[in-house]
Image (cartoon, rainbow over all chains, first blue to last red; front, side):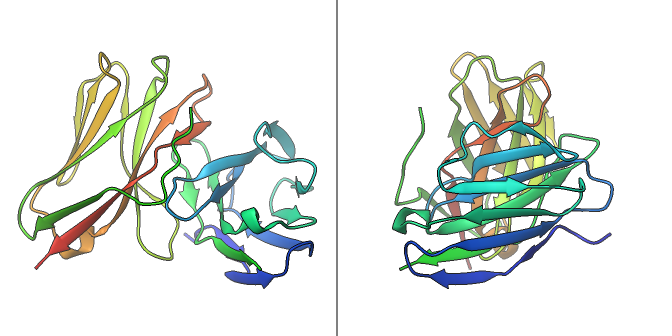
Length: 112
Length: 113
């Protein structure tokens, strides 16, 4: 079974630029999550989708972050404009039908 | 509240010894907990879980203990191997649907030869 795929694996941008991350969950997984993991900390949930609907986006900084999962499969997370404090690893995870979340390898973002 | 830590707690153990990694969780209403292992450059990987109606659960070489009175979890790894070197996170479930988890700050386990 293929795991959660993410791209790109690494991205370096300057502050105020825009960036987008892509996630392809495990086939058949209805729930998809985006996490932000700052160096030295645990992952923090940004947004959770159930199929193509948002379940929880309470911790998503909506002035600059947006996410979509239009067809209930792949998802993109966008940051516009980026700030220095957005430097982190962005993890995508998916789950169905159990509670176990399967994580992708993450995208490491560096904002200069 | 959120834990903010720039320096991960580190546990160093000799290969073959047992490891005990501890975690304090924040919400007494949390009813489901998971331990994750995260190796460098990879996403977290599920190790073992436990529900709040249990005190102990065993897996292969791993045991999770839950003390609800003091809101404490521990992960015990028997006969620690070099491949166990990683950062370990506990995560607590804060909602009834079982899918909204809050992660702890993590502990780095280093296995010495």
